[in-house]
Length: 207
Image (tube, rainbow, N blue to C red; front, side, top):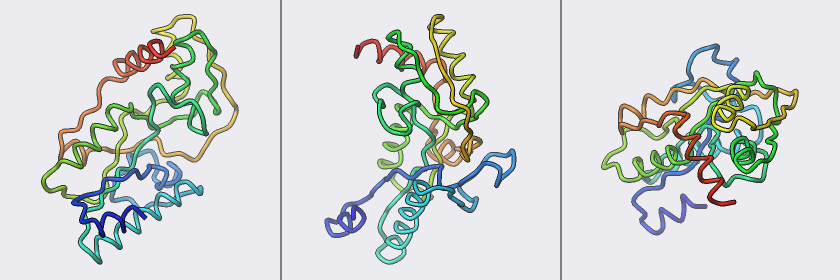
């Protein structure tokens, strides 16, 4: 238990990875951005486990005054994520960068909330180093994109890029408001294409 270890060792603050999966399906909120004030309603084991972490952190804060802060992260893209259910979030650009076909598990129209790995890491650092964070939860989302839009953006940079798509859709939130982090820390994700270029360059450098 990281929270218990932090308490026993008098660690000043823990910033841990929660997830926008805690919110469940976008349809529960309509076509409006989801904020940290909205009631979570996870639809899968992953989101439920992340919400359990958030609840446990709240118990530690109330019982011991621990500084435990959760970052509810969107799907993170960037080179290096090559395995697991979310591997597509790295491979959609990493594979075409080195001449391979990338596979999306869902339909092209499926919308997804995304954030680049460097931007997400910066929010963790900002939260860890802040003298007095004002909240226990911060959303970390940068872009609302369909998988088709993501593939098209890659083709703009790599004209011969190839992608395949599945036929399914998933109950994922895609409109996620990160205003809280922006106002409190000045956190501002970079332009999507700029980050995509960095992703591709890193994949090629690692090949």
